[in-house]
Image 1 (cartoon, rainbow, N blue to C red):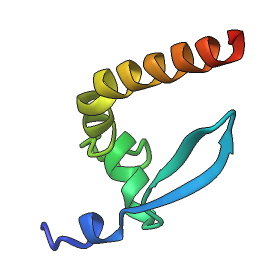
Image 2: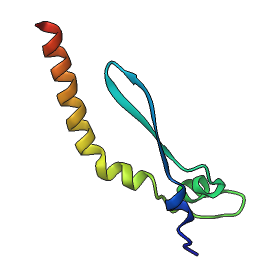
Image 3: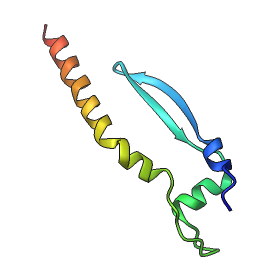
Length: 79
């Protein structure tokens, strides 16, 4: 059943920056979060991905933002 526990458990943690670009770790510490994302072999639980579809949805925007940031960094370095 859907209790909302998974959604409530999702955390975002900012990592050390690399070259001025921010990096974030996103996920859940719940044991069953990985089971839902990838499924299991021993209990035949089929995967019900929840994180990868979200990543896929926002990835194009992040690629565009990263491309702009890299181009700006190159431009700034050349000046």
